[in-house]
View 1 (spheres, helix red, strand yellow):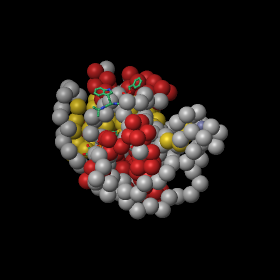
View 2: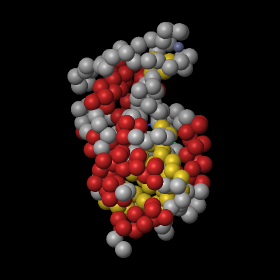
View 3: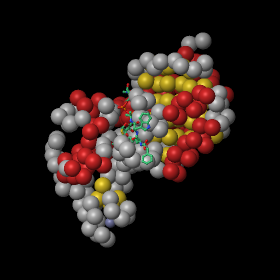
Length: 246
Ligand code: BJW
Ligand code: ZN
């Protein structure tokens, strides 16, 4: 059986489906993937070096400017056929959990009802000191590599920070628990557009395979096969997902 037909068959028979998405699902919406950003407009900066609490405290205006610029791009981006297919799958599967590593809101805008954001949201900044949420007022209007002074908290004057999970920071407990519970007894685990290098999210694939789920990767780069029931579909999310979901 062709791999795509095999994957369709596994998904249509599954009682419980878990989907894990990474930056690749938003690539066809014009959003640079995390590691592709190394060659993008902020090419003079390594994203893995900007996405840490230490980097932010060292140069808040640089890091806040990077997030403001990305927020500006996201406000103009639209969900693509991949996000739409994931939203349809949520309606079709008897039990469904969507876990995303993405800090964008394109799944929600495509119609997904329940989205667990493992790495937080670029649209929900909060105070570094007291933890209170901060509300944006207007969309930024930035050119590339522009520093922007971050706002301060109106309650305690602390520095406002992006609402994302940086390297060395703990993932939100509720989302992580939901992820582990969903993976524990799923039949199919669909991993879409992620390089699978960032933990603990990357470890969910192994957990799913170890408890007997079929693992399906969807990525333009062929993924190594490590488990008995593991398929690697090579192609983009926007091309392949509509073929997997009616
Ligand atoms: C397409 C496509 C198309 C292209 N269609 N596909 C165990 C082992 C080793 C290290 C660790 C470990 N446990 C923890 C660590 C340390 C660290 C880590 O994992 N480091 C590794 C890099 C080595 N992890 C952490 O620090 C985590 N925290 C933690 O563990 O805390 C423990 C703790 C406990 C108690 C107290 C305190 C702490 C936190 C990790 C947070 C990650 N955050 C980021 C930044 C978010 C904010 C932002 O966006 O700026 O999240 S990093 C970045 O990577 C971002 C992403 O969500 C994440 C994953 O990237 P993703 O989505 O896979 O994107 P890319 O770009 O890597 O890949 C894109 C893929 O798409 C590619 O495969 C393309 O081929 C594909 N693609 N076009 C489909 N059209
Ligand atoms: Zn505060």
